[in-house]
Length: 159
Length: 159
DNA sequence: AAAAGATGCTGGACGATCTCGATCGAAATC
DNA sequence: GATTTCGATCGAGATCGTCCAGCATCTTTT
Image: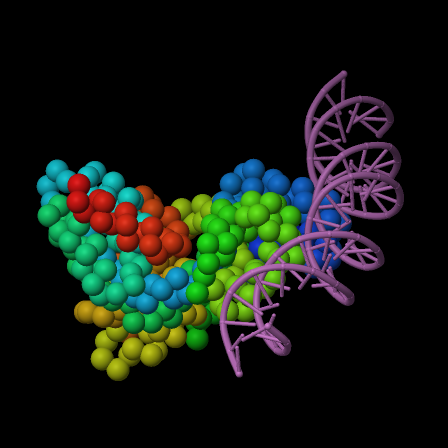
């Protein structure tokens, strides 16, 4: 599906999505038209969903992040989901198995804002909120190389 | 801290980080050297943490995602954190208040892999795992415009 | 097995883009 | 009100991206 060159390109782009075609070409050992074509196809196939920029929430004044688990009251599931989607401070939301229906990440500027936002869903769902104290791992992609990942797992397991 | 032009630039770059300086310049009404300078300063100040690429996990064979809540056994906190950091299938991890010490996102190729990875921390922590069934909101930044966000909140609240 | 077709790469040319230096203007400071 | 500073623009030179023609390799067809 993806060959070594593709993975190589992706690895470089994960670190800096604005790397020039020429630079990419030099690093993987291709010509720039070839790199251009490969990127085009990676986008076309949906492997690359988007080139984007990672913004520090703190720089925007969001001093607090929280993980909110949300259990909509009976019959309120869709309303709650719509509500979450429409509140832009929710920066991520997953629908999961188990008692908690949704697990979402919330960006807020103050505890007051947190309270304000949770109030808006309080009559439609039960929520459990955990304030984020630190981020040991910030968003990163899974291993690009399947084989390497498996091998490493074995090594760690053996030790 | 950030002016309208900066926010405008960021908004465009969130959608496509590879937008050329010229195009950015045209869209915000500046010259390209000015845009270049602004981006440089946004990076320097840490507002822009990185330009990166969003990869579809499915394209890499990760058919399953899970949210794992992790409660290290007494005295095992640091060991567990290190372990999580060293397992690349964890694509995100937050240290939170409350009973669950860590909340992490796990990318796996199969239920078997999930089991294998959780086994590796089973003797050092209790875990609760929720399989992700859908992603109502995929990673997005919080509102770039503070004032707009506040205003909207009021409107929604009033209705 | 030879021919035909498809795929993916290269190199060069041309047009577009970026960067650098010089200069200008507006706002803040004294 | 003069000065300083910051951020903007402009133009020239350098760099980069895209298009195209040609070539090698692999697969398919007969």
